[in-house]
Length: 187
Image 1 (tube, rainbow, N blue to C red):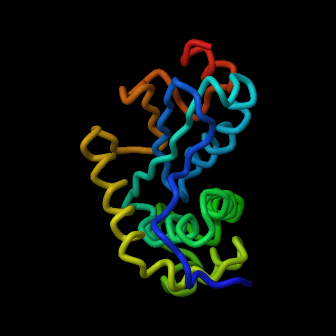
Image 2: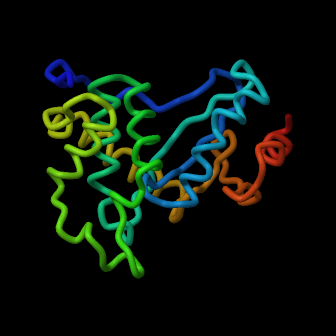
Image 3: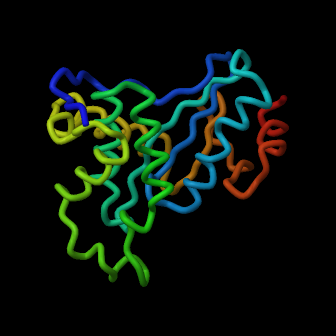
């Protein structure tokens, strides 16, 4: 496993580079966010990376009790290993949700005994980078605060939420198909 000694500020988690901008506000342990995250690359494949830019934003939700720690660790991965490491951390968390979530209305289960250090170590293992030092970087903390403020300033309260060219689009949901998303985006 490599270390994050030369980590920098987190790279933005963006896909594509087209003129239409889709911001997707996700919570890293939410099952509906997991569903939406899994459709982002297929959406880009369908409409073209030259036509669409997808920007992943975070909206931490307190009933997902490890939300803040998991989100900050994903940002640490992006600081330590770049955008690809951040996306790998997100994929890893979504593929192993039960390791980061609670049972019975988010109040019981084996994760009650896990510590933030164990969460960071688990995500580090998923990404292959020791994220302990990167987690502590001031730039990572600043990025987490930015995501939180940005979501609140835009009236985002739940995940996933979609914004097209910086305007919230309540017609989009995680339950829709990639084709429905493309149509909603005008493709």
